[in-house]
Length: 162
Image (cartoon, rainbow, N blue to C red; front, side, top):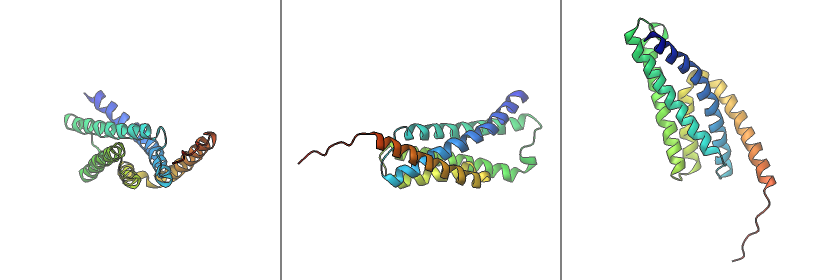
């Protein structure tokens, strides 16, 4: 059982970096989409990946936490209050990113989709907030450049006379 718990904790630790990276990419794309008022192809797929990673993070954390009772392993140096807040923020992140994705699928306005996704990213990666801001800004710039290039390569569609 200890090997399973150690594996869950190891994957939980590395998945946190995947959540951070994919979340920054998703929020960066959402910033560009909100600013341009148009959905970027592939943006929904990135956002769905972000939702899946956050939910996997919560499940891995739950598995590691449940394994704590079967072994003598301390989490957060025995600081139960810190462990509780970590769990609460993880669940809040999962709810927020899922809500953001559902809002997008149902055709909600751009800003609520962006705000809920960004709030979920912040909840999921609170201890790395400066890195989140820097990576998200870089991802937004890259998404804007990529989107601008694809717009420039598309031929103009003539307007239909009415």
